[in-house]
Each structure stands twice: as structure tokens, then as C-alpha cells.
Length: 74
Image 1 (spheres, rainbow, N blue to C red):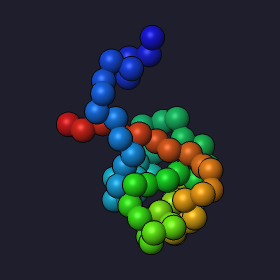
Image 2: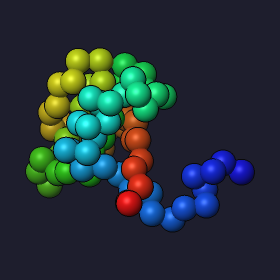
Image 3: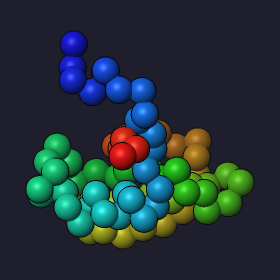
Image 4: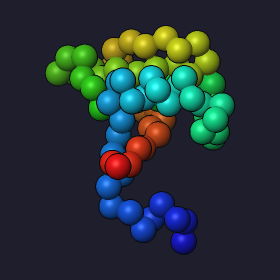
């Protein structure tokens, strides 16, 4: 069993938190040059997305599939 499975407070990060993950991605590790979702909505049909290769952020249709990096409350 993985260590994180013992915790029940995982959630999708906000746009601000996800950007901090981007800034700290080398220290945190485990990121590719992929796109990651945030929980922050841009509109009813879009949420904010971030390219971890360039740092670019933009709204993207929620129906698209991509990566999520969960965070924990503390």
C-alpha cells in the first residue's frame, strides 16, 4: 500500500496552488512536461490548465482528459 492511501484529505489544487507546483516542480519531482488541471473554473465548461513545459496557463474544456496532481490539506 502506498503511503498516501492512508490520508483522506487529497484534493485537486486551485490555480494558484497548481502554479506553485509548477514553480517547485524540480524540488517536488515526478512531473513531466505535461499539462495539469486545477480546480479553478474559467467558465461553466472550462477549467484552468497549465503546461508544465512552459508555465503557460489557460482555460480548457473540462471534457478533455489530462493529468491531475493532487494536494493535501495541512
